[in-house]
Image 1 (spheres, rainbow, N blue to C red):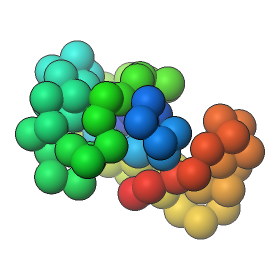
Image 2: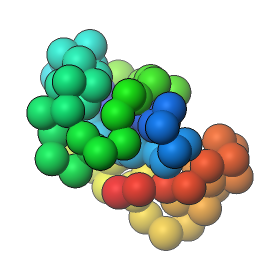
Image 3: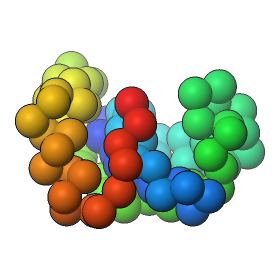
Image 4: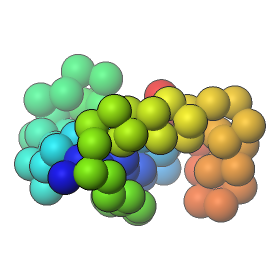
Length: 84
């Protein structure tokens, strides 16, 4: 299984979207500051996770969520600033 996930920084409330095969491991990497793009905003909280049977589908959905229109929807839904 593959997943698309949305995280919220508990430091500054920014949102982050990614995809992975192991959400718990990936969240641990984000929170241990081993991901260059997110280490300054740690700790992170998992807000949403969607499951896909194919990696390509998870990556496609990640890109969709990162589109301008979807970013605005996510900002309104979670009331946060989105970082991609």
